[in-house]
Image 1 (cartoon, rainbow, N blue to C red):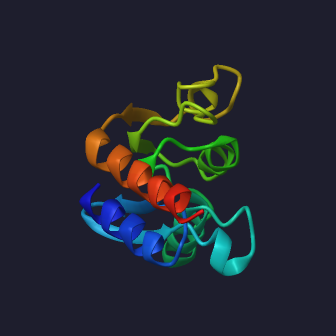
Image 2: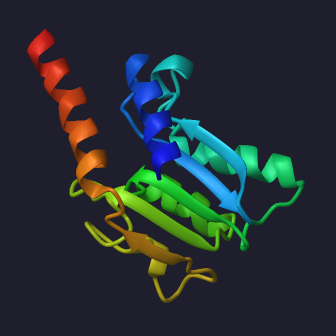
Length: 145
């Protein structure tokens, strides 16, 4: 999660909402990213989605059941869907997203019983650091107005 936080901070410097994601298997980083929605002018360029794409490319597979995704913010519906489709084995997130979180805060898409894949999910890892980073980012934006 420390690596995901570093990526989130790097994204923040680029005026991206500070979310970082790292996919790991057997101690090896398979893919990593921070949000790039502003840079790409693409609202779908979330850290999780980009990290999944990079990990799939690196392993030459279309599934990641052996991998763990560390992300600083609870995944949204889009990212939760990508996690299920890529069959990521485990998801560990930092801060809850009480507005759009799909790992239990608003809805639990990742563990929905009707889906064909349900990753192991753990939340709250380095929650304070992840939450504080987001709060500071949005406070600076509000103060700049």
